Image (cartoon, rainbow, N blue to C red; front, side):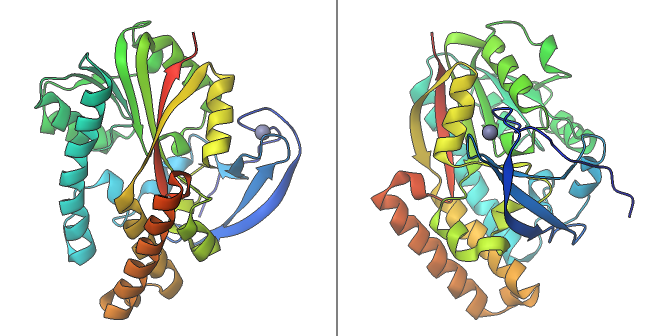
Length: 304
Ligand SMILES: [Zn+2]
């Protein structure tokens, strides 16, 4: 297979130029190739290096197993995923409505448009950004009231009261440049909501290199609460609130079990029980300390 990998010489968060190798992970979903995770010795951000460049990354999403870009509904895992998805869409909307009086949003990395659609159906004004052509087509089919935007510079300054990135920031090549655009677009009293996996969670430390949320090379960065806060505060944002994402512990544990025993384990009760136990244990640890959750939702406000 033809690859176009780029090797970063400076940290995508702080610009520092010295890293150390932390882990080697396999791309279980598509290429089966190994990718290194390196840690910046200054800001401690963990990131995939080398990584596919912006042009080459598209093909790594080209797998029927890549759930977030499809509405596939075959198999028990996908059925469960669908049920949980419907529930969490509603929960996410309610969270935003408890935090913002205005219903005016940019959904950045909208995928196939399920969240945008949930919002439009509840009287939100929705602009959606999605780079993938097939996913954009699905958004158009789903609801014509969703306003698809091309590039961020087209979006007006201080025009949005809410910006959301649900499991998106870890996929964005031009990290600081994009976050600066969010700062420009967001109203001064607006909120920026970012959900990303947490590599300092219990399930990450248990599954190590097989932890499904490393998802190399699609995940370019692997955040924890400290490294995300460092990145965001350098771009003019203050952390307002942290919310654990309970279901992600189970889902990520299931996918991690599949990575370990590729792929028959989820056809046995054993794999499901293991995933349930490790997911639950991760959540119990989260009750003790929110920052230990498998995935975390962060609410940021502009530092004024
Ligand atoms: Zn750094």
